[in-house]
Image (cartoon, rainbow, N blue to C red; front, side, top):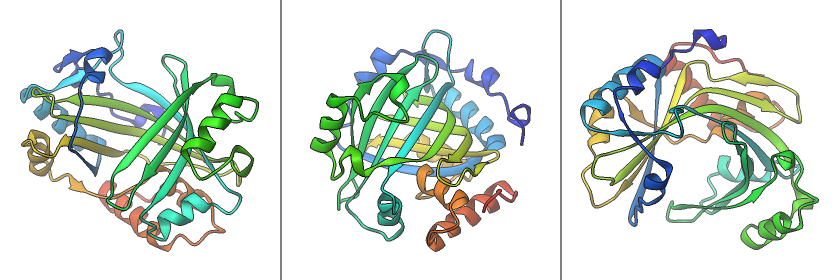
Length: 265
């Protein structure tokens, strides 16, 4: 799939009222429930139209409503973080650097999942030039060691994910929705690259005490929940030396949803 094959969502996004980053940051979901969903671009158009009709607002920075992200995931030489997830370890971590391509802001991020299924993210700003190597940044290395099980010397870049994100908020400010599309993956260790074609990954973050209009919108459009990790799918598609059985099932589900075969090694 080429870039021009993807659906342009600009017209439907203009139907949603904007919300600023400051307003977005003020939304605190104290009893948060996170759920992921999988669909394809043609269905997303209808989801966005329904969201506009329901009064959802779209994060807008300047005139940008579709933000570009680039993440570099780090792992040990043996892919410890990938294998922990594959092997269903309840308590696990992921380490990545992320740059917001439209602003140039970059961060080192540590995601930690506990045995109750809750995920917490901590991050520290870094220069964009250190996305692939932050070893010279003493503050970043100390931050990693404080908030994760790993030291910088144990980790090297494993895979890159590049995608476009739309962020929505409901009128009651009790839920946030991130919508990732145009997903591209590259494995730094094998050199293989691939895409998720017209797959869309949606993550709903909601206040567990409040009714979710978006869940009904997704259900009405036959968008189904799925547990999926962009990093793990990236490695599954690009690293043939690892045991990938459980995640290959996820890949087959994606292929069924978009009615296309993904390029894999």
